[in-house]
Image (cartoon, rainbow, N blue to C red):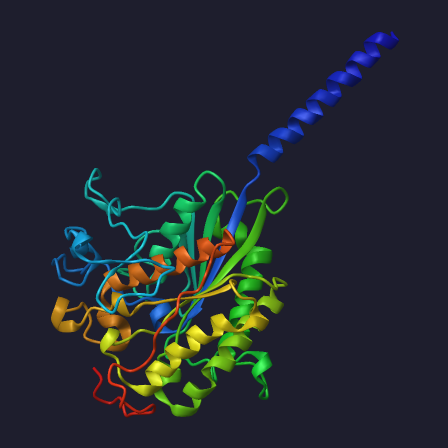
Length: 372
């Protein structure tokens, strides 16, 4: 009897261990990337025209372009002052011609949640820009991170943004002082806490708070146009951005959270307006702030991704929205993700970003009414 009972106990233990191991093996891990900013983080890159017309400047047009003629801008090297393509960017596989009708590819294991000025979520594909036929940096970012974590973790790109906003006021972090944090900052933190603590099962299919885990993996920032419209907000930008990074890390209890910044490179290498260059300089200088942790904040050059309206005819004739050029947005998101990957690997070394005006006699603070 004792031998039979011992055998039963051993069998029960084996079953319990098997069930535990099976549960652990099937547990889902989600890498969450928070992206924030103003209208260019919302995304104005036109993927395709709803009319069906094939238009230069759209993502659909880019599928038929051989981009190898462009020099490659390496993420961790000082950029050449020419038009270029982002390291890691690949247009192949974005469109599935095997379906009828052909459709934009959905990236497996990568999910998008666009909050703030919109409320959309689903599997990452075209359509998480400001309009459902547009893209923003989330597209290249999600594709890159999905490939990096494939087979290891699911990826959620949580994008929180509002157009026409400034870090001086709307995104003002608590450490910058004032009567209260900016409304964008307060709403962003609320949205992110709710997403992480209550809503992941609605944003990531199959996620179970009882068995699965998540990690806030990195923070991406692409913003700066509105602050560059006034001299004081441009002068304050470096301090405000450093405070934003500090406060976001403190808010989410992640003191070394990697931060990747897409430079406000509007106008490309021809940009000579002092306040615009001052914003870019601030975005670079924050990477050299030892108090934030060298190697944990990256700024990626974007001026080589700028395409003028006359060059591509754009999709939208608005220079402050990168002329609606989807190629530009795809490269920005890809470059931001490539920098985040290197930070996660502990390999990031910030390259120098030259923000001197093209002509040394261009003063800071010059009127930019006719830039575009």
